[in-house]
Image: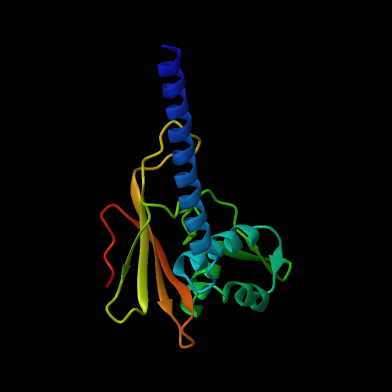
Length: 172
């Protein structure tokens, strides 16, 4: 009886170790994808972090455009600044709001994050379903959030559009 219990205990430990190794491997693969500077996921993740960083502080228009231009198209930047920043003492500061315009979603970058690519491989749409949030200070209905990326003239991925929709987004 002690051998059976010992064998079962050993088997449980082996299975738990294998599961942990698989989860660690998947996590490392996701991290490697996010670290590849030319990958769309890297651009999205880095653009999200940059937007968070730029909430604090005040900037000249050219300084703000220069910082954003690494991850966003010029068309996107102009609209983003117009909608999210106000001038104060000759500088631009972020408007305080719970729902900033065209803010990069906080994707999980796992099996729930989907992407579509055009036939010419110059446009990608990355999207994810976010469940409804209720009984929180800020609530919302369930929604697909998406980021459209395009390759610029230098073959660099840049964020060109961000949005939300109730139906699965379609790449045009």
